[in-house]
Length: 343
Image (cartoon, rainbow, N blue to C red; front, top):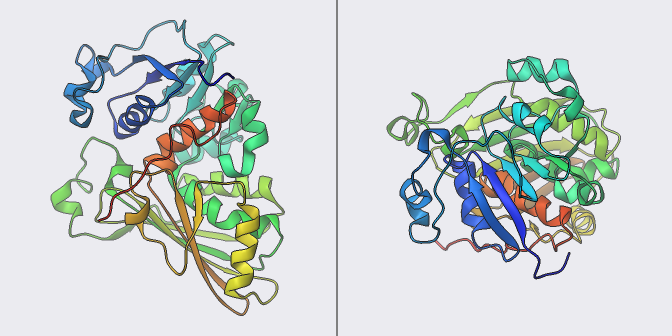
């Protein structure tokens, strides 16, 4: 695609945190023309009145979801689980789509319905979707029309484990201890995510049952010979943004910190958005950016990998735009060299 060619884009679901981040990124993307953004409850309201951080930066107003979609090249769906499967099958075949929900990530209908607690009505369409973990699936993403954007926990975990699985270095059980900020619960407050409750709290949730577990195992099996037991636990952090995962594993041979660094550096040599750090990363270093920072420590065959990212950017909207860039023949970093703040 020529550098001066516009990609005409529509967004379904622009009033939540994921939609807000899509808008924040795409409004300044050099190859994107935003055509419409939907939000049924906010229809008619200017985007800048709903997302005050965008006040004065766009003349767009929210609209109701159109019954038919035309005159766009690509749509993003930042909707609650269950809604994208009602929209995507009816899209014209020339329109590319990137779904940020969990509707099309899982290839097994029974597994989807068990973990998402709802019927799947579009499994035929699901078969056309490509899993959008950019760093491990670039070739397929470049040729895809439909992308299932990964979950935030899944992104942090898969990027942490992929080099080990691809090189067949794991032995035995893998334990993932993952923590997330409150924005992962969405823009509407609930009893346990309301700030006065969350700000001094720390708790685990969905033990052994989190919907990202089958997604992680499905994709690890795609990356390499995954036969290990996965123990995956999620916790609620008293911060707004960020995921931090500590991944405990055992290798099938002794590895030093330098061995692990060399392995990861080679695997991610073409991945601008994966940064290797000394010791532990910090969610403050990745907030508002599309980076995933990885650190690690070793003790013989015992390994710990630390993974940190912004759940709304690399874990959602940023990765979605990264995938769009590949789908339209652009450099995957286009419009995504977002710099965090210090402090």
